[in-house]
Image (cartoon, rainbow, N blue to C red; front, side):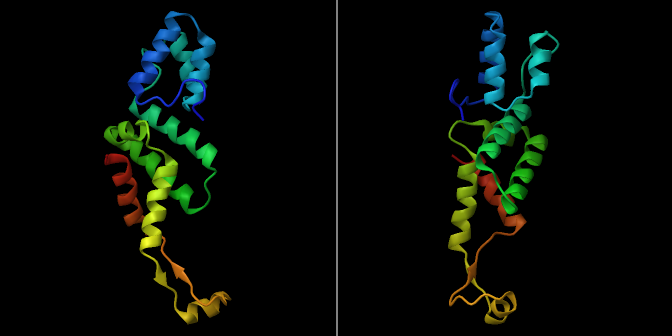
Length: 161
């Protein structure tokens, strides 16, 4: 995922690298670095033409990281909802966006935190519900957090440590 330039820790690191590459007139590497970090081509073009003072800000860097990681993760259903929530929060909260960009924080780690909570909080499903659903297993449990709880878990994962 971060094969050529590594996982950059902040929007400042992205901008510093972009500036160094621009000073070297290495536009191909700027494009490659931006693509690796999920930064849209339009921003790259504007930056290289001198129309943007920096390649990205906290929000753009965080949303780019989320996009790259989501593409690799290929989330479905509830995971997509969790990711959309995270993206919306990054738009509204620069501090969260900065934490999302940190090295070592990832969508996989965030989903793992949600899964961990889910397994620790499984509830037995009533036999009548199992029957109505056509489930014949002996023991059926469910532990998916509600959106309110999921929001707290997501925020805690990125903001702590």
